[in-house]
Length: 410
Image (cartoon, rainbow, N blue to C red; front, side, top):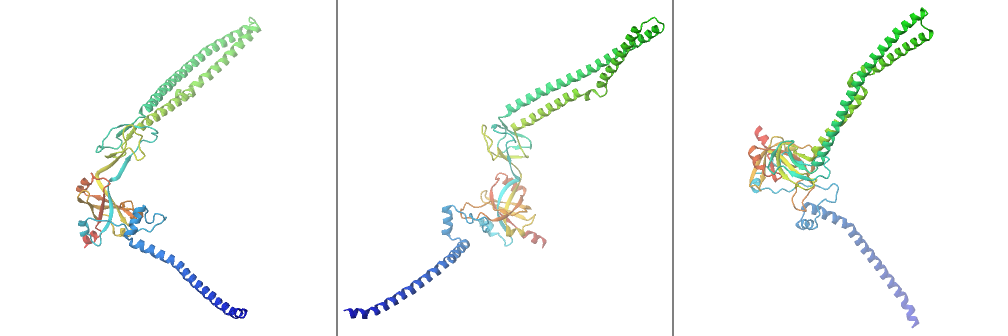
């Protein structure tokens, strides 16, 4: 039994070694295949991403619609594709190869103007609306009042009263200075008379002293009185010179009082200007398009009302950046507006100078919202402008006939 076991043992070890080697080779082969699969995963993912972006299959679109995500929304510079524009059948049938199509919006001349609360209105509320939708107003007209009018009017009254007090003080100061000048003149005349009398008395005393009639004491007293009178004259002349050297309105006391009056006038002017904070004025000549606030409400951030000059309607067209080169000023434009059941016509008035992000997009969550466009301003003709004046901000499809100038030239 032991012999058989010793004989079979090398054979068993050899078989085990072969089995181990085969298992090792099998594991290495499986590892290589797995490694290759790992390397192919990025390739498959990149290919799938490219195919999905290019074809945008319905399943992908539904996924974006359900999740609310937007293609390129997570990137700082997403890849923008030209927007898909659904055109009315009648426009599609007349579309030429040279035409440029873009989404458009009807706007009044100069666009919609926001009528906001005056600067510094603070916590004031709307007290009264003085216009209705559709009213035509001129620039500077008062269209609404705020409830801070009473408080601001009180400030105006206080400033007016303060000005009246300062004006009275000015008049009083002028009168005081004029009286002081007259008093100084009278004082000078009086001391001059006294000095003349003292001088005459001194001459008489000196004559009497020379004849031995007057005493030395009398002579000394006469001389002292004459000197004091002369000094009084000098002092009175100096006092009068203070009032006569400059005009009455340039006297220091009068100047100070006049400056106080000017300060009070400035305070009243500022209070009157502040009173305008209670008045909401129209910024342009135009028509009231919409009212965004009600009496008692704090003026909204978006403004109290909207205005626009609808006497001349315009259209703002967003043209894809690689199609703008053929667009020129003066080219005819057709605006398809299915909402009003007819087309509008106009001409290209101006072309924007900057490339911006698309502002008019569809409601489809999977639609591209990062298209780069240039805004073209179209002026509608008289009949179209009259129709469009009732549909401010209506979105339409614009067809710019960029081949019109070439056909006219031929």
